Amino acid sequence: MNSFLGASGQAEFYPSPDGDFSAMSRKIPGVSSAHFLKLVEERGTAGFWSCDLLTGQCSCSPGLLRVMGIDSPKHFSLVNLINQVHPEDRNLCEDIWPLIRSGVPVNRDFRIIRGDRTVRWVGLRSEVVLDADQRPARAVGLLNDISQLHENRQALDESLGRYRALVSTIAAMEWRATASGEPVFSHGWTALTGQPESEVVNGNWVNALHPDDRGSVIAAWRHAVATLAPYVTNHRIMKADGEYEWFHARAVPIIHKGSRPHEWLGMIIRHSDFIGTGKSENAGEATLTPMQIRAGRAMLQWTLEDLSRESGVSVSSIRRIEAEGERTTRPASLVAIRNAFEREGLIFSEDNAVSLRRRPVLQP
Image 1 (cartoon, rainbow, N blue to C red):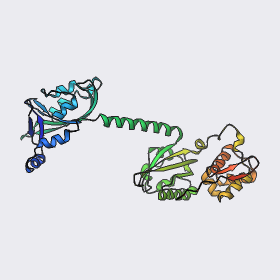
Image 2: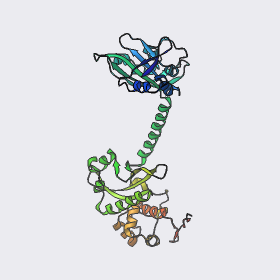
Image 3: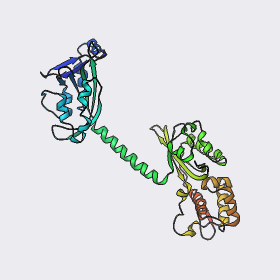
Image 4: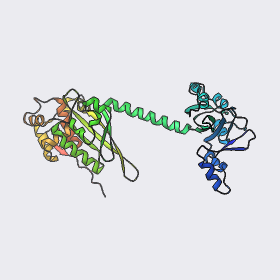
């Protein structure tokens, strides 16, 4: 049963279409629909209205008057509401009354100018009740103040916009995964690899990777999911044009309270964009001797394959660098190798020495 403020200022009751609410109120001694209505409206952000579609006579609840910023319980009509709509939103409301009269439910969000000249966002929801002949007889509705919800939504949209603008400048694409580790790639993956989204599921996304990189990528991803550690790896992807290119991939888990993972957020960056052209304009900063590379691998107990995976430089190139030095090496490859070592704490000096920065031991 629904309650509305009639012309006399007293509550008028109209049964809901399914009758459940009125039946419930009749079964509870001393409780009427007004009690339920008060419970809904007591926060001052919601109000109800009702309109006879044959006579056009309308009534409303006190809560609706509060939402609209009207103090006196004067006669209410939908025209009163439409007249308070913000001028910039009038075009959203011109067809509300025709739709309601024709029996079409309405669901609209717009701004109103309240009686105190403040602007609020409201949501109008309506349903149409049919008479015995199945013709629209009465409309019932809800007016809800959604200003806070709209503000939160706008802040979220702005935050997402800033995030996407930042990601788009450095990443070839962004991706996410379920808490259990099943990647959910966006259409960007299809644009990059040519692999249809329908073929990505059940781990088939690895088919777009170079065969030599699939095992290490799968192992790194499984380890990250199992330990909730950040996922960082370098691998080759076959692009839509059939050519392989090195990419840097990373992802972090989004953790719920209670240390439960919710999902993973990740990005794929072209390796050339990731390593750039070096740390500075000083080319000597990227200089590594064959002895330093071999010493670095020994100190970290890395194989050629380990260094290739972490740096994005092929095994054959690393083997050639260790044998021939810089003479036949692209500067970007040396930068990538040095960056991979330095991420693990290695320090290189000009006298051909290599040292390992000791990391503090975390106390349990």
